Length: 149
Image 1 (cartoon, helix red, strand yellow):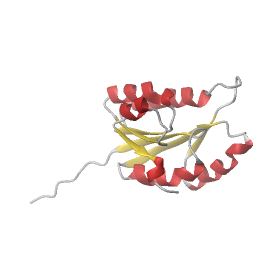
Image 2 (tube, helix red, strand yellow):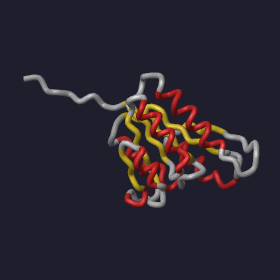
Image 3 (cartoon, one colour):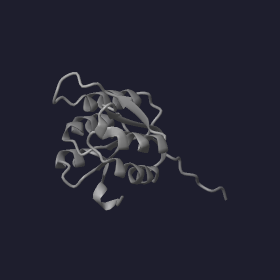
């Protein structure tokens, strides 16, 4: 009798690097890999900021593509906007089964709705203080405190 083989999900992992600790990147990737193959891995931030130096080393060791965002105006979060645009562009290719969003930012709630409307799963990764709306908008939400460092 032939063995049934399960299709492995093809996943995108997007980090709001201005909202997630660099310490959490390896455990998030490890957990995300439980859901499928991580084909695209990107992190969004202004990498010229000194505070992002430690994060840059983690990117190199985990083959994550850094996406540079320049601060066009003080107090604005360009990372969220570009992350959303690229997430939808990737979702609309039809090549992926799901998107992992690493952020505790409620601004990504509409993105989770849109991705799910496209028929993809949304795996959220964030802290316990993540607003309930974002948690509920994801197909599955994993609290980073339960992952260790």
